[in-house]
Length: 453
Image 1 (cartoon, rainbow, N blue to C red):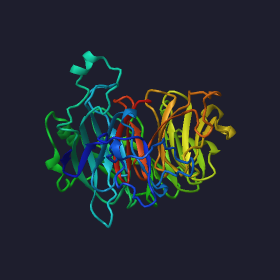
Image 2: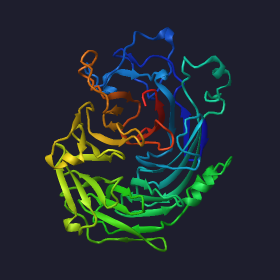
Image 3: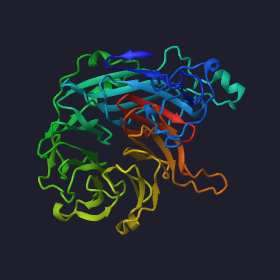
């Protein structure tokens, strides 16, 4: 395990045993999500399924979860000190579709420090992300020279650069621009900031360079641009490919930011305000430059077109869930939006049938509110979701029902359940590392690749 200022990262596969161990009533569950066990002192084990036989997925079940190493091609965990409940993946110049190990990933996260302590925007480089499982059917010739399997002597490395942030970071998003690393943050103090972190990324990206010395106390950097015109704090935030920004607040208002010359933005003071309650999430259409979607505590999903005046820009509305709609994700290839709500339900919406108010697919496996979900970047039928039940699930909507083998308690589209984190808030697929998922929770970050995707 290597430490850097402000955080640490380690290989989470250094454990043995089966997926779950039933514990006696007088035993205590382990404090860590991955526990070391030996086969000599383990009672009979069985596969654990949250929601079945009284299992809720919480510590109250009286069981200890042990991850099965053979189910993961890679599994690492990282800590950045204070909880960072929002993050985004930073694209790098190392190439696309990288499948070789060890891997490197860059993310930017925002802290939510307790008791008035200093908060930060944290740029993170995770390197030496080694393969944690060697397939048994690999050729012997490959095994002797396969550099994918790490020595584990050095282990994964985490480097950070911290920038001081005024207030907790409610949400953080990276602008998809090639020449600059622009980062937008929603502050708990009601202000939206844009930061230029290009220099910080350069310092972390330099081969053989550790930027840990920059993050001991945090750098004092002024935002490139700030907007305090929202009437309340918020969480909804999304960049368009052209540098436009949308911000939504807890009073139901959405503002559009248009990029200007001289590193500035024009924020339209006329809000999009068709929502009657807090705007929880916003997503630009991946195919239509003037269209975006939003979801709200008012239980609706709305489709907007910025070519119209804000008062007339809401083009489509559907009553999507029976409770707050927390999160949406727009499919990059198909006319589909996936949504998750406080009702624990996931719904797939075909925009060609949006006005009917009927979802084309509904999945109920989460046992608590869904807090995050996202479509896979290249596989148009795969998405991942997570919720307050501490489950992170991989799904494939292309999987059809098998009348012979289907377990009625498990949707056939469910591919994989990952557990071990508590209070999962966000997940993202890495666009340059196929199948790699990164998730953040109150207990830290998980970085992993399963055998299913």
